[in-house]
Image (cartoon, rainbow, N blue to C red; front, side):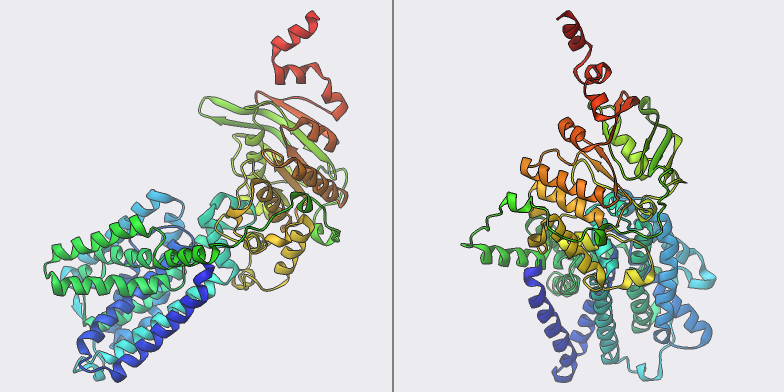
Length: 604
């Protein structure tokens, strides 16, 4: 998509300039101004919707409810105070955001189809309230809103420029979010919410913040729209078709992009207006819009701007040579001052207190007990191994340690502190980092974006900071250089080999300066040359004071790296000891090869 970023900004700027000039140079503009006003309204709503649904990936089909809230806030308070609703647009935005915070805390606990259905239910709930609370809303009849003196002849031009200004402000808000750490976190959530939490992103805070911000443009526009129409009724503000149209606008233009929803707003409402003129009947309009939706899904599933971007990228790539990547070069450990990479303040350094300890952990899935009363310690400054046959409960135990699963029984201690009930992102902030068995990078983001997305701490200052500003970017480049991955900084993570992605994931964890790193099968499926690189990195991190717990089926690698090894079998700790003690232990051999093998050995 970056291939079209600057051209898209130019097109957007030209569009705004033309819209600004149109009433000044156009003739017989009243009808076309009214059409463009609604186009800009849909551009505003689609851009606001884009914050939660395009960036964070939570698709709302009831988002027009916040236009309703803005309309009724301006209309009701304007009626009470004797002022036109337009003058209360800021209050409309604030009320919409406040209600969105409450709704977000409830609805954003769900995902996927459940979230979509709940957003429609919220829309229908507010429609029911509006229709039945007659003393406040006027019921199904609604009420007339107060008009300003200059509006006696109902000129459209002032409203035209007001909506144009709101559209520009909305685009500016979305651009600010996309360039901020908040925006990077939202895209990370869209890619993989569980992974985002594991690198310190407070997913609940991010989602609710994005949901509230997405409602603000609706609230502003709603107050002005109520005055523009001159009346407010539930069917006007809460029609489900309005939500469908604004979603369609974002999809047609390209959700997740800056200008896509704006362009989509003009295309969709322009097509709707054209179909009204040509077809006339309401059913014909719906048919035409349905065809547009089907064609978009079939031929441009990512939207207009991303489709053009990919086409341009393919054309530019034709005939260009693919750069040769020497894996041996990547495998070299860079001579970088590692102390600055792993340095962490405020953590316990008492050698008596284990870096990580679990006591009596039990985790059941229905009638299956995956982890059955496991107790073990990981000594500070050690490289500890956790091995066992498939299905022995290693990854489940990892998930209980990191907070992905809540254990049914037992407790987890990090640096002596009980973290059993802490959130995943809180554990990451406390110094517990992890990688995954199947690498979970944010595939649509660049390698550098993957490294600047993690947050050591959550604060307003951090959220609004520029994505590529501050010391975090310098540190990310330093970590990439240490890992031998500096040349991939601008590459999309999805384009890297599996082994390179493993190294990037470890680099991502290092951004949090963890006191202990949990590595879940880091050597599986990667080039043997990169395995040597991985082992070298682990040793250097450990020499610098980082504790490591590693789950791995590559037994020679584990035994060569680890100071102590715990063996799991059937959800229980079978034996713990040094690599030499583990290597020839009959119980370990039996756990891996089965009792029949032991019988054969004894027969010999």
